[in-house]
Image (cartoon, rainbow, N blue to C red; front, top):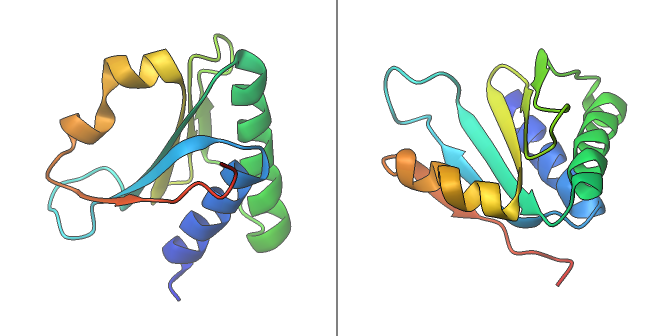
Amino acid sequence: MQSTDITVTNIVKGIENVKGENICVLDFTELENVVCKYFVICDCKSNTQVNAISNSIKKTLSKNIREKPFQIEGLENKNWVLLDYVDVVVHIFKKDFREIYNLEELWSDAKIIRIDNLNE
């Protein structure tokens, strides 16, 4: 398993640990001129949960593969938090903001992998 695949797997675990919803992975590996290899996108209902998901991902990756995000954006307003792990970028949205920005449609040329929510 490649290191980016391991990163994605651990990010999904971190999201599922705190009941993040509607998890999907956008796979850019077959595309040219992209900013990273994968987006992992999820949504949730509250600012508290946005914070919990962000913390869970950081803790899971730090513990399991000793990775820290290169950059974090959006923690101030908690509507859309971005964790940049260079080859993998995580987008944590409050549900209504995910619908507004609709990254899946914006990047529709990427392969979209929907993750079954184990928490439902």
